[in-house]
Amino acid sequence: GYRPEDDYDYLFKLVLIGDSGVGKSNLLSRFTKNEFNLESKSTIGVEFATKSLSIDGKVIKAQLLVYDVTRHSTFENVARWLKELRDHTDPNIVVMLIGNKSDLRHLVAVQTEDAKAFSERESLYFMETSALTATNVESAFTEVLSQIYKIVS
Ligand code: GDP
Image (tube, rainbow, N blue to C red; front, side, top):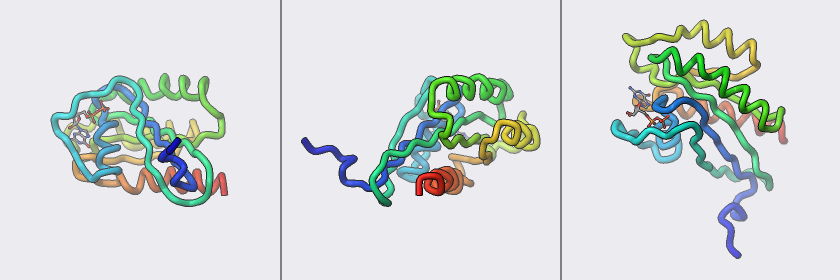
């Protein structure tokens, strides 16, 4: 039968993980459709989406751990999400930490330096984004995908 994945050389599967309400759905819709929804329904736990890029014959997975820069508890929970990830996935998987909602500057509760230090300790790529203003969304996805591409090529 027809499988859409057969039309691509490389199929990149992006998985976004993080607490409810941190902006996973909106990051994906901003990246894949350039759309943002202020009243989107929160997703619990894991958000899956596929983005297809034509390169050369494999399925590649990228994991993005997302927290909300205005809610410290969502950053504290990243450590837990990361443990789940490491217990249940390929150790060579590329993981990026994303501090979303950087547009809400006056409400920031997680300092960039703290998130950076955590990322360095855990060997994660790190970026702050805003799905609302589209700041760094393209860069974050492009960065994680190009890191993976470097590994597989
Ligand atoms: P999810 O549960 O992690 O999938 O989060 P959603 O994508 O559903 O977003 C939860 C809420 O945060 C929604 O009201 C979004 O409109 C809002 N939101 C998502 N990203 C941003 C952002 O970058 N900035 C701001 N100000 N709000 C955002």
